[in-house]
Image (cartoon, rainbow, N blue to C red; front, top):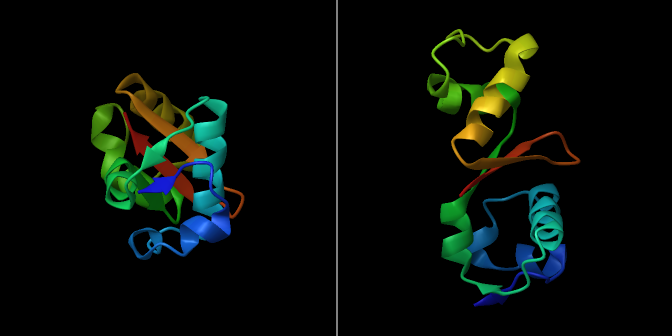
Length: 106
């Protein structure tokens, strides 16, 4: 078990969390802090709840079917429509400092 309020360096040392960038780990810590969640979590649990996307186009590919009005090909002008559709389905979306996207499945 690891403590959510740990530092980025602490979290990045866990083998199970090496799939996330340090920027994504920092965004996770901030998100849990904003939600006032201060608890222990299993690294595998975090991997199962969070997905990091390197680009908006990558995220679009996985979630565009949530809104039938969205085109198949990524359209930056409709990114807000995609995130709105995702949030309506219970997903939390966080943009990291490095520009990647972090999606938390609620």
